[in-house]
Length: 460
Figure (cartoon, rainbow, N blue to C red):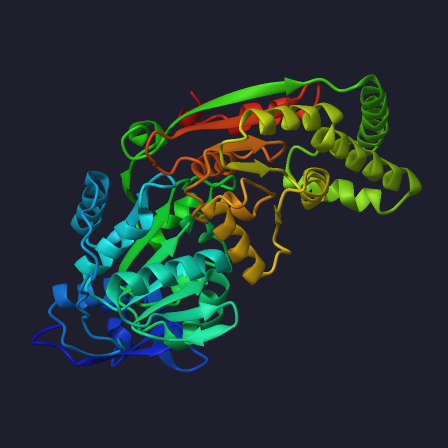
């Protein structure tokens, strides 16, 4: 195209970029744009905005930008706080990568402050996206304290949009088509949640040219971590627990404790195992994949034998999660660590409530109301409560710096969950020595699960 070419106009429309003024013969002038026959316009996904603008500038094509609805925003940090070396290195690496990419840091090493430094560097209105209500409030409090101005909130019954806003993933993907042009920087906390058809819309429908992903565990069991590069950028900085323990994280050790079933439990377990496996064999089923498990549930719903096999499976799991020997070992550990702050982790809420009733320990689950949850954590921080038992609520993001002992009664086989649980007890405190115990029932799938979830350098 000779001369300066025709003037194009960019507009934001429900999570997409409209490019007006393209002649049909020159549609390849603008990357990622496709003709929309329904509305008779040329359109691209919102997150392609940066690449479109860069290409137009490279080709020296004049354009009118009516898509972006924000201006640069300078941030003034209200508290004097010196960043750690790894925080400065992370932000420098991110900015060198043109303000796109993932920073992988262990829990407790200051991912939030790293993000704040990135906000100062980018100087753009910012949307922070979090997976839980607890993290939503945690970020909101930290950002208001850091910058000294009101921060918007989307989620948990709140809907206030400001130049700096915190949102849950659920609220972000629902509303982003309306205000995806209002922010220049997106920060995805616990960004391993982002890949997938639903949550990824929060990234796809925003035109924010600067993007930062934060996580301690970027790998996903479904392999969808390949989507990061397209939606946020590649991993541009990574440090592991073993690199930062001692100086920036508490020193720690992990210990596996193997438990034997009682004779009665062994008999009950073996019987249920026989019923369950006989059904799998008869139906030629394998549950080594999600599809196999779905087939098992389908077959189990069709016959009396299937229902009995499902009940047998559930009873096997009940034995694994609440064997008498586990409770005896738990009692011993509680007595051993009377002077420490303890987090007890289980795989299910039923065991949480069993432990809570038996030992009068506060129980924290997804059913716990927000106000009660905050009060419980405040009392744990102050020392009024020395122990909390939970299933998965504390796996991710919630700040519990006082905790130094973790006891895993049961869990999944995922590395992420195990690393997250370890991370809950590693926040640095003077003279703190953290320890994570794993209670494993011999002769069960827990042995395999433990081996799988320990496949990380944090566990030696």
